[in-house]
Length: 246
Image 1 (cartoon, rainbow, N blue to C red):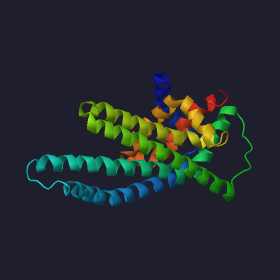
Image 2 (spheres, rainbow, N blue to C red):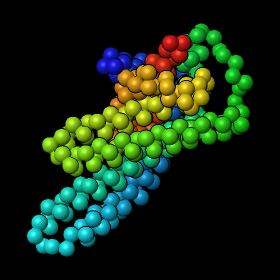
Image 3 (cartoon, rainbow, N blue to C red):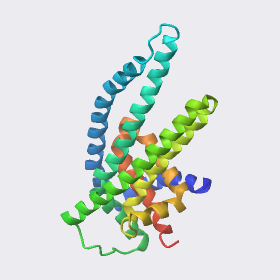
Image 4 (tube, rainbow, N blue to C red):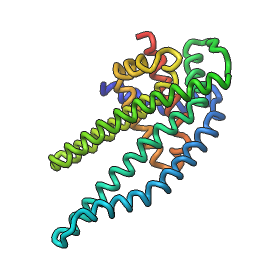
């Protein structure tokens, strides 16, 4: 699995070269704007919620003694829960809304791999809507699982504080896995149903994690937010397409 993680990470520089070779830069415009707009909106909504959640938690502690510790703990718990949840929602929202643009980009990588253009019936509104609906199904499935495992690990960390750093790494890897899943699914949707895609990603979990690690790193920066969706899509396709017949 480690080799797959490294291969997925190394695919990002290759993705830049392939995008330039196939002249796919126009796919960056709308997904980049979608990512920036929704990222800014979620930030503005989440900031006051985090503060109110912090105050709400503190209100349950009526004593003066130890109140400073409680306030600090409440602050960090509120930050982790609200911003962690916001990141999960933002990530999957971008993956769904970008699908009409990312799917053709992934398909261009597949066509290049085969050396010919595969007939997929061309662009149509019906296919775009179908892709968004599939994306919603995948996103809902993954959000439920991601939240479940994240909350489970957070509870474990609360009961065993000494493993907090280890738990934080695991939570990040879970986030990366499901981000990579979404990026890989743009190419998988032409070959599998939702369950088939999930099974494929599970067999190649290292690729999903490696792809998601870089994707998450990019969306934490201003420039990265603009380029993360298309760049991650191409990087995922470069590693996914050769394995479709496995």
